Length: 219
Image (cartoon, helix red, strand yellow):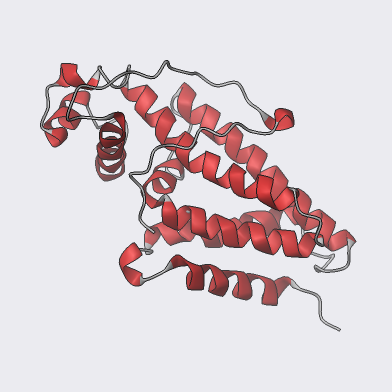
């Protein structure tokens, strides 16, 4: 949610109604030859390989080939790295949601578009989304990420409800359950998707077709 996991984290805010206060950190100027993006990319890979709790800043420094003190010229803490990483994943999802909600098409079409765009976000930010889906609320940053995920889930659930009210989706399906199942399909991509498999657009088309051919009402 291709393979541009090393891109700089997106900084677009949530819509005012959904904006959630979170810890901020003043950007730090890096030393020549080492930038914040490189530090973040290496940290995300290590967190995914070893787990966030099991990864030390010393191991990150070793991976980067720099001293541990050099890392603190880019970020203030390991927790800040985690926050930046999960925000990068979540910001992509909320950007997709903002695009969808700005449209004036029927709810079913907006729901399909949100699923499709979410697949593309996952493919583009694969390592970051993988880390996001592994957080369990053990730290303040993880709890904040889970809170934002619940806000996003509510957006999806509301679209399902609207589509049901329009008669485009089966009325006997619980909206929250449908939303979770739809994104369970999308999120499962972290277990097997690789940019080496090819472009993400055909994958997004396939997932959307499978999901909605099974949910759409029939004459």
